[in-house]
Length: 136
View 1 (cartoon, rainbow, N blue to C red):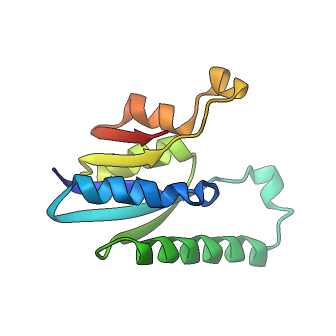
View 2 (view 1 turned 180 degrees about the horizontal axis):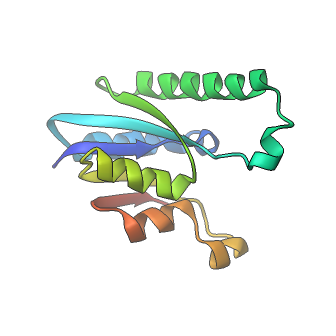
């Protein structure tokens, strides 16, 4: 059993999120800390100047509300965290700096572009400092 779990949450995972939460619940030890993390992909600087600040703030508020909704479905009181950056790198960095011993995440079916660029789950599996359980 694991003592410090990280569950990356993406808005497009829909009902699959409940399956990931169930797996994490089965893997957690007594008194385990659970963190739900959502990574907000960084917007290139040249595009950022064209986006009104209220749109960016609304996006952050929506992400926070989404995490709160997922947290309410998890048995226990998971922490929530928002992080900006590249999805895979941000998840690995968070795991390294917070002593995570297990990441539980969902992966999508690989697409052609993943052959060249790699998916978020593939990056996490290759670089995480801990166990990674991937739901397909």
